[in-house]
Structure formats: C-alpha cells, structure tokens
Amino acid sequence: MRHFPPPSPQEIKTPRDSKPLKHRIHALRTLPTVLSAILAILLLGNLSSTTPALPSSSDVEPKLQEPPSHISDEPPEQFVAPSHQPPPLHLQQKIIKYNGSSWLEDERSLSTSFSSSVTLDAEWILLPPLKTRQPIYCYYDTDKQATVDERDAETELLLTWRRAWWAQGFRPVVLSAADAMNNSFYDQVQRMPLTSELRQDLMRWLAWDAMGGGILSEFTVFPIVPQQDELVPFLSTGVFPSLTKWTDLDNAFIVGQKADVHSALQTILQIEHIHETTSVTAALSDTAVAVNTTSRPLAYYSPNIIETKYAKVIQKADRAGTLRNLNKLINYHLLVIWQNSFSEGIEVMKPLPKHATAMVAGAWKLAQSLASCPESPMLSSCPPNIPKCSPCVASPMAVTVLPRLRFHNSPDVFTIGAVPHPWSFALVNNLRESINVTWILESPRDTWLSAVTQAYLGSGVTSSRRVVQFKELVAGEANSTQFLWLLADDEIPSDLEWHFGFTIPDKGMDDGKSLSPVPAIRLLKDEEEPDRVKQVAHEQVLLDRAKQVVMMSKPFINGTEMRTSLEAWNMADTEAWRFTRAFHARRFLEREEWEKTYRQRRGIN
Image (cartoon, rainbow, N blue to C red; front, side, top):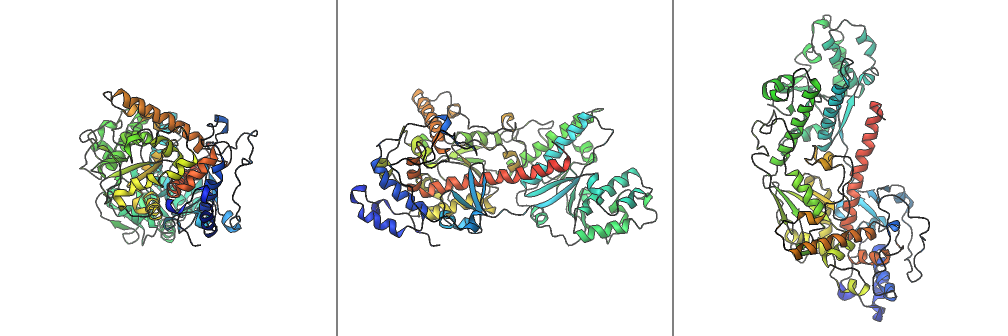
C-alpha cells in the first residue's frame, strides 16, 4: 500500500478555513493514522481550550488489565471516531498482543516508516521476524550425595550459564537422565560393565543424541569472547561439517550433526574393551572426531584451571561455597569483557537537555550500574581464555551524556537512549501542565526524533527517513550489541540481565521486579543550584502525571482525546515509541515462554 507522508504545518488549515483540509483528508483516507490526526484536530476545535483534568489512578491501565467497569467505552459526544475498514482477517490472526503492545512480524518492518500503512491500525506495530535460536545443550543430573546447599549452588551456576548463552542468541537447554532414557541405546548401555566416569559421559551423549545433536557443552563453558570473534556466529548457524571438539576444551564442548552423533554412539557400543575407556571421544578414532586446535576459543572453568589460576575461589571442605565463589568470578569476567568491548565507554542520549533530566534518569542509572564493578573473589583477574584484559577496578568505564547520536557509529561506544511518548515529551520538555489544540497546531513535529538524529542524519531529512533509521538502531542485527533503547515513561525492564548475559552490579536490579526510573533529583550533584533542583523535581512531577495518560489503552476515555491528536501530529515520534515498546514486550515474551518450557522440563513449579 502506498504511504502518504504527513502534511506540513503550512498545508494544515485551522478549523476556520476547512475546505483545503477536507480535500487533504480525501487524499489521505487510505492512511488511518493521518486521517485520525486531521479529524481529531478539526473536531477538537470545539472542545475546551485546555486539557481535561488528569485521570484518577483508576482510569490508568498500565499493563493488560481492563479499565474499571464504571468507565464508559463510548467516546465523548463531541468526538466522532473516524470510520475505516477493519484490517484483513489474515493480518488480525497474526497479531501478537502482550503487556500493552500489539505487533505483527513482517520482513518489511525495518524499511517501513509507519506500521499503519501495512497493518491499517494505528496501534499495531511491525517488528522484524524473530531470529531462530540455535539450541545449545548441557547435561546435568543431580548427584544424590550432594547436599541441598550444593544443589542450590549448582542451580545458580546453571542460571549463569543459561543467561550468558541466551544473551548471545542461543537457546540453552539443560538435559537430564530422563532425556537419555528416550534414546534407543539406553537399555544396552545399562547392561554394559562401565566405569562411573564413562557411564556418566555416555548418559550425556545419549541425551544429546536423543535431541538430534547440535552443540553439547558443560555448564562451566562460557561465551566470553572478544566482540569480533567468529566462533559464536559460526556456532549460531547450527551447520557443522563434522563431529568436532577443541583441544583446549577437552570433552567439555563438542559440536556435530545428528547423523554424526548417532554414528559415534553406535561405534562406541561395539567396542569390545569399552570398560577401559574414560570418555566417548577418547574411545573414538582420530578420524571420527575432528580436533580444532584454536587456542582457548571459549572460557572453560575446568577443575584444573580453577586450581591453577583461581585457587582463591576454592573453599576447602565447602563445595557449595566454592561453587558460589566461582559463579561470582564468572559473572565478573562476563561483565569485564563486555566493558572492555567499549573502550570509549557508555553514552546516554539526552536530546534537548534543558528539561530532559527526569526523562533520562532510568537510562543514566543503568549506565552507572553497567560501568561499575561487581563483587568478585579476584578483582584483578581475567577470563581463562583472555589472559590480558582491563579489570574494572584498574580502569573504570566512562559514562557521558550526549544530546545527539554521533555522526559515525563507533563500535567502541555503547549507547543507551530513553524514548519518550510525545505526550510525556511535550509536558516535560515544555514544563507544561496541560496541552490544547492551539498549542499542538503551533508546535513543531517530531521534535525528539529530529534532535536525536540531527548529527547522525543531518538536517533536511524527512521524519519518515528518520524513523526508519531509528528502527534499524533499535532492532537491526548489526546494532543489537551497541545500542539499548528504553522507554522514558515506563519501568526499566526487569530482565536486562538476560539481554546482557551477566548480573548487573546493582542489587536492586536483579530482584525479579520491574523498577521505576530512579527519581531524577538523585542524579543532581550536591552543588547544584537550588533553582535547578526545583526544576528537576518539577520535571519528575510532570513525567509522573504524563504516565497516567500515556498508559491508558482506551482511545476515548477521559484525557486521551488530546493525546490521540498529539500522537497523530507527531507520527514519527509516536512510531518510535510504539516500536520500542513492542520490541521490549516481544523480547520479554520470548524469554518468558522459553523459561516456562525450561521449568516444565526440570519439573520446577
């Protein structure tokens, strides 16, 4: 469907001269969002010149809850909802709704300025299709002799392993004896005279074979690699020419296609003196398993490496304590190498900085947490596969604030942005208590997006092009490791540790709860002038009030008519906010569904 760009302010006539406006509406009738904008602005001229009183907390719908029954779903009499044909049924069936967002996955998402030109609905956002995650398997069977404390410590380490590989784009799967029992070779293995060491390794292979091969890892092997390393992209393809292991990883990390894994098992079970073998790979011929000699491709925390390089984590006669120390050390190494990947530090976007402190407070707090040092038993240490690194205690990561994106993307900078809803931005940036139609008509369009991308794209660029480029920065595969865009008027996502792959060094951020952005007043230095402190406090009050209107889902309940008009007047800013919100909602939903599957597999309530 052809997309018509929004009219310029010069083309819009006030309600006193409505004839040109009606002609414009006729030309734009195929674009529901623009049609809504023009009708809203025209018809709202009859409304009060000020914004209706802010809604009470009972009017707000922050998540998926329905509004209270006493609130009418009917629009006010003065406002006539624009009529248009409903979206085609095949589109409606593909829509996914979660946490207040609705989206449709489509290959055109990153090249389409406004989703409504495809979905025919202003609320439905186009997102790029989810990339298939390559499974990575780990075999874990609880030792019956282990204490409860030891099992808990192992579970914590397993969580760290799953989180690290998930952040790299994989789907971690923990296998158990139940999976090995699904293998047709299981009964034969149980009847064979084997050492306990070989039996455990065979159970691991049986479970792996039952899953169809792929990647088999110990939960002490982590993807701690330089940013430009080629191994992780290779593993994510899931295409392995042969059964392969790595010299420095011993038997802790093996890859292979289904046929090769099954053939290896058949070969093993036909060996006459199998009881003399210690592992599956040791029993196979040199031609059956290829050996990659790449030095230290991944971080492998083997018992030998722990004893020789990280002896301080070992607590004699306390295995649970040793495992917890190891877990802290691994988390520390994951964070340190992430910090080392961005030698120029973290940049927080603060466009139009005069009144933006409250809107970027959450992004600033997150940046400070990512730049800090977590607890570790060995603060000056580096991962086993990267002996030379810059521990955070020696070279703290810099955090700076910039009003615009750099003209040239730098791979040495990590950027955090806070995307405000047009309503929040209008109130806070202009320190306004209310908004009316006259103000909307006289205000510039898409101010936030223009300010953010000014240095990046230059002047004279249409809002359509700016929003397309912004979507690429949010969801483009090439930018996924360099940018993080949050919502300025929503809670900080509670699962960011799964996005980064390590524990963020702030105890308040890993308690499983969503956090409201830190009050902006805390970001001010002690020597700030009293007037500045008062201004930022006022920004926070306006932002909190704006959230109430932003989070209402019904389009015509008290207070949202003006919001609808402002959204239509700032189509690119609105699209950027909705796209970011939907992108985070889908990311959370994907992990939540996977976690549910994991808990079912492990029998966890």
